[in-house]
Length: 407
Image (cartoon, rainbow, N blue to C red; front, side):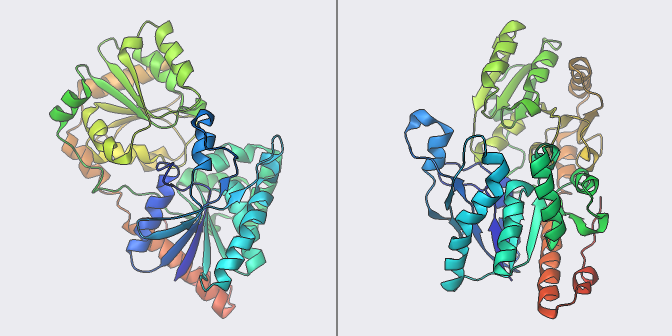
């Protein structure tokens, strides 16, 4: 089968971590030998590559074409208009990408299915493209597209329309499937295909050497992710103030960085909070291995890959009681789930893990249950059923070949 992956969330040379979870799933799918794939990953147009423009300049430096891990990628530009950007984003993406796909088809680069990631605006634009080109579309829900963006009236209407018109729907967690159901989507239309973890990349490192390399001398708490409000890093800082023997390392960058630093200074613990900024994927196993506990206290998540990455390196997790989180943290060797989280409750859970940590080999063994094979098999079955449905004109074909899901 030939598929076209369509998403604004995809890595590039200047932004190697952007949407890496989409690339990883696609790489595992292609490695199965069941599909070939191309990627169209549009970027907002920005006029300058000057470093003084920060992330916007990085977007401007994204090449129009590149190849990563043997997959060809195009990065067409689309306009983003101030104040109107959110409401017209699907149409802007559609208008920018339709000529690109028509050209590719004319040049012999046809495809059988559009594999769209992130419901808004990408999934909506993907469905528009599928209808214009006569190609079936599968949309994957990934997290804030349904948890946050769907709260707004205009995107919510678009999401409902796209969900009704898409040929297939995937959610990376049971919680996101439930979000789609709350928007009126029938349960049996949504396949729950969770993300896996790269067990070759994420594996236990030499813990003693890692701690020496990072200069760690106290029990170490770790957070990995964008520094944005929904991740609640400041709540972690408040909990750290209650655990004077520990330190906190934060990997990632974003608009909350200054607020996190201010919170640490206000509590007199700035010397125990280290912000390392963004780091390459191949550096993360060392950091996970060096830590005692990974923290994730977000208000919303889809399927947070950092949890499995940490566990694959032998490090347990403490996480807020998010919808569907039991699908990931489902045993004592994985870590603790804190319901109705507060700084005090978070600190208490951290102390429990530090006082009686699970064997790191047991935490690694738990993570080994989450390989990519079942997710890849589920995608292949779904794409094949949709292609057979289109070729036969039989709407029952996709039902007859529906992959089983467990959630």
